[in-house]
Length: 460
Image (cartoon, rainbow, N blue to C red; front, side, top):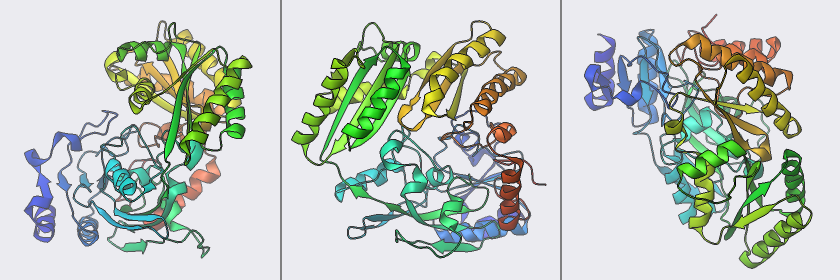
């Protein structure tokens, strides 16, 4: 029996799409770097069906690429030529919210915003939050150990992950839907799969930690003259604001461009640095008083030159709309979006050196900087130097990532490695670390059937 016939017989015709039935979105994630339509798109609706699909593909020596919401920016969900894609859209839904243990058990295809809203209805906060919340899926979020805007308070995805169920390349189901905070029983397979980018197993279900739902949130947009002031603001906020949940920084040219794109004038003229600072709490009056006192002291000390406090969710949304930069791909149609992590004390030195190095090599290139100052995550938005010429793009990336290496940073803070960063992984990981990672891959997927070529490159 052929592969497609074998899969269709087990999963049903509606769960196996091939040829012209395969939608265009299965070709590429949000990086728009995918070039191959998968030979089939599998749409299982249960863990048993995921297991059966992988077992069949394994028997046919058929490589499989797991796909979630396709919001990634590193090419990690892009199928290669002749590969099958496995989509988890139909494996969605909240299975349980445990109010006593403050946990949520849910299926991997659940959209993040759906999970957030379910948690809020139950009186809890799901701490993971990304700009792509309306389309990204829980399985992909875990597989990429996604970060987002509130890592400073709640940590990365792995910090909010208690248990997973996953299926290995040969169809074996490994289930550890643990709800315990303390479980010191050997190797932590749950944490191993966080950040594995679908190369070790397909995540099917998970248990996430919930937090008390804040009753109040304060948000301000601040103007600062110098990056040293950004660092000082963060240091003082960590002490004065126990509910500090976000501290985002935008360099002048980024902020000016994006507030114009949004059609609003929040700070005019645009300051050298614009910072969004946010804090959460249970007592609205106390939070507001403490937040405004903190800003007043920062203004009095000259750390801030101006501050706008949001008086409504709409005003706070306007601040975040500028930071999230939804118009960026329209304003920079050949956008290269790089995502690195640095010690905050070296962030401005890095940005200055990076801008200079890129302009020395590519005259008049536009380079914009913004990111999560609170956790050291810097985003670099650059024009593709010579659109359509991959060599020039690779050269640009090599310049940036070599500077990251010299600064002792990470070439990927939250986007993952996929295919777009795998050539530069050695800038952040030692040969010994890479050898251990390859050994793990061989142990769990000896035939190299799951997401081949991603993260570590071709199987050895």
